[in-house]
Image 1: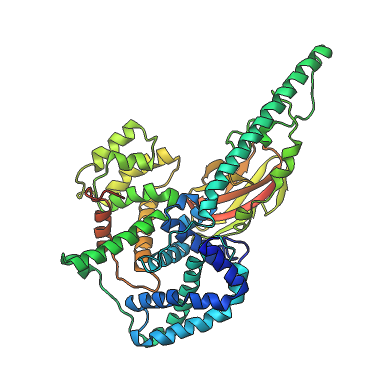
Image 2: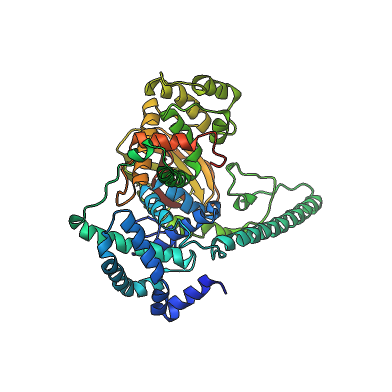
Length: 250
Length: 251
């Protein structure tokens, strides 16, 4: 079966191995160790649900039961701990960086006798992009250069679903085009069979949902200021994925 | 090194030996499909042989595609199932596929039939678990669909921050017997509450359609592919009742 990464085929369904992984998670009672992209896909996909249920039923019974450590699900726990540890270190570095910045700012203000600092400010939104509130803070002047590149890194899981049309309701997306660049206002526009209210979600490249907007009609202009980076967006109908696309903010 | 690591290594270095090692798994899967009525018992050896021939041709693809994220045993079972499905489709015209009517199993209360019911209840639980974040809402809607009394726990699981007023309204309308309410009555009451808490604006009809589509989907998933049972709304009701039975310790 052709596929474009470990988890999805080019038809936007779970690969054989991902089906097997989900079944393992059910058997080991570790469903919540699965990547969220798999969980949300299966919740919406009847085909993949069917395959999982069938294989799970097939493997029930003592004949082909197994209890050995799992190569992914058990490793995942360790990874989560590692990620937490890394996140803690990054947070510590940031706190130190911000403190140094504030101290140097204070001394500069003393030396320059209250000269107004103007120009573009790289704010910590790069770091905090996963939070829902985009309102830029101008109280801190911290260099975000080291995080800049990270904001443009593709998400392998979401990337494979770009252009996926997984539900029965047909949607033709007019804007944004995949990979389109924006500076400020972003126009979302589509044509749908039905006139239902749809849910528009904007996600960061680390798969965090940043905004959830309920849209009546087939057009929405997003005019909040958001930091440069790669973003993904989903169009959903009652939690069912209709479309997944991506765009850049420069 | 775990058994799985050894099998991954064997897949790379000596896949034929791995296939030999997995002959018992192939035979168990074929037996299960014969029991399910997918193949005829006299065809057992032929089917095992056909699967092995197909597996041999799939070795390069398996070496390329399997990355060791799942247990090899499970991955191998997925591959064998795919081959079985193709064999079944090819031979479908010649096979009198067993169409069991499960409703008969639920009528009499024998041990054997209880065991079938247990199997179906387990399958139903597996199906429900696949809905991930939608699961609490789905369970709530199944209760409404089958007019099963709603508990504060159901509401808390669906939306932990549901206001006291909405909770009171739901339990007042659906906490006891509400068989007399029509679908329209039910969704007219529940839709604004769900919209308020989920920050949506679904119509009454959209909510009803959502629940109906999920019921149809669950029935399809219970029946399997290829279809092995004849579940209907009525047999689903039995499974849902059993699932929500207060005598079950684990849900």
